[in-house]
Length: 120
Image 1: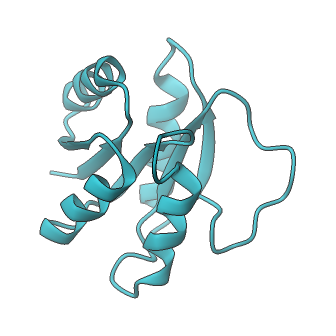
Image 2 (image 1 turned 120 degrees about the vertical axis):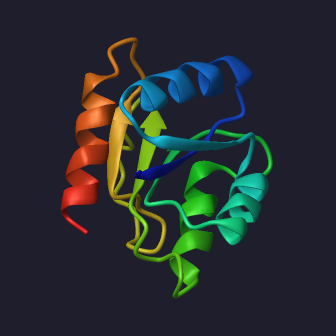
């Protein structure tokens, strides 16, 4: 079963995304911030990560940078949930695989995750 790690500081968003991904037959692990996300990755590597862009402490971009610094985690695709896509270009060391705008329609998110997994 494909493993997804969801990192978001909102408990309600975590519950909804966990339900969405479990309904799509993913094994789900959740974390409430970037530091906990890194800890969970240390316990078991996910196949893909879905993270919020704005979180207290370590935001999504710093989280992506940390993943890309480590040989064991740099190839894990990261899909970043955003209110708005960044207008400025990001350096390769902090850019996720893809951005998905937050929405009540989860099909675009599931599609981006499938595309990222297929491209591995």
